Length: 500
View 1 (cartoon, rainbow, N blue to C red):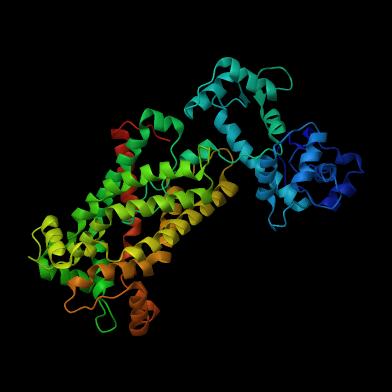
View 2 (view 1 turned 30 degrees about the vertical axis):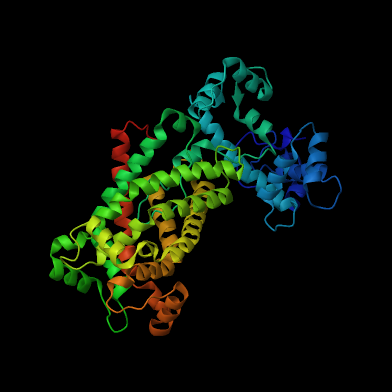
C-alpha cells in the first residue's frame, strides 16, 4: 500500500480526485511508472486509498492517533513526536489534523526535501547510495561510523539485496517520516557570518559538529569580523551622516544628504567623514565573540539535543545572546555615537572621550539609550530571521530541483532584503537610542526618558521624525553587503576555510 504510492518516473502534476477516479476505470489509466508522486492517471486515486486506510476513525482527517494506528497496520512504526511533526508540517488551517488536500501537499513537499537529501548523499552522482557514501556524508557532519554500521543502515532500506539504495528505495523508506535538518541546505544558507550592515543584531549562524571540532568555527568568525571591519570602514561616511541626521535633523533643520556631507567636510575636512569608525570597528571582535559564546550556552539551556535549532528556538537563543553581547559592549556604542558627533578638537581620541564623559556625567552616561537598544533587538532579529527563512524556503520550493546551492546573487539578495526589513522595523527605537546617547552633547538639552522622547518626536515632527536618517542608512546596505561578502570569501581562502 505504502510503496505503491511512490513515484518511479517524472511526469506532470496530478489531476483532481474526481478525474483520477473516472479515468481509473479505463485500460489507459494504468500508471506506467508503477505508482509515483508523478501525476499518473490513477495516482491521486491511490493517494486517496492510502488516506482512507490511515483515516481509522473515518472523520475525513488524519490526527496523530490516526497516523499511529494506520501506519502500524501497514508495518511502519513512528514515535508520537515524529507523527506530531508530520501533522504540524502539513496542517495549513491549524485544526490539528490533515485533510486530504493537506495530506497530498505534505507528501509532495516532503518528496522535494527527500530528493535534495538524496542528491547530497549521492557523491558519485550515479543515482545510488552505497556504504562509503553514507560514511563520507556522516563524516562531513562530524559523525564517524564504521563500515559495518553503514551497511546496517543500508540493509534497513535495501529491498533488492544489492547493498545500494536507489531513489525509489530511499523514498519508500522515508515516506511519512519527518525530515527537518537538511545539512546541505543549512551549510549553503549561512547568513549572519557573511552580512554586516553596521548593526550586529542578527541571530548567529549554526556550526556543524565538524566545524566545532576542527576549529573552523573561529575561522568563520574571524573572516566575518574582518569582512565587517572593511565593510564598515568603506561605508563609514554614510553611517556618520545617518547619526547626524538622527540627532540634528528636524522640521526647522531639514538636513539633506549632499548638505550633510558638505557640512561635515567644511567643519573638519574629508577625514572627519570617518569620525566614530575606529570604535565601531573595534567593537566587532568582543561583540561577536561574546554573542557566539552566549548563543552556544543558551542553546544548551533551551534543552534542544538537535545540532540545528528550530526557528523559534534560534530566535529566542539569538535574541538573548544579542542582549548579553550588547549589554557587555554598550559603553562602546555610546562612545561611537559621541565620537561621530564630536566637533573638531573636542576630543583627542577614544580614551579622552571616555575620560571626559566619565568625569562630567558619571558611569550612568555609558548606558543612556540602553532600554530602546535592548527592545530593538527582538524586532530586528525576529524580522530579519523570518524574512530570510521565508525567502530561502520560497527559493527552495520553486527552484531547488537538483541542488540546494542558491548561488551568490540569490544569497546576497535574500540577505539584503531581510536585513533591510529588520532595520526598518527597529529603526524608530534605534533613532531614540541615538538621541538619548547624544543628549549630553547638545547644549542645554534636558534629560529625557524613552517614552517622553517618543512623544516629543511624534508631537513636533510626526511619525516621519522617527525615520530621520533612513535614506543614508539604506544607501549603505547594498555596498556594505557586497563588500563584506567579497572580503569574507577572500579571507576564508586565506584562513584555509573550505568553500561550501
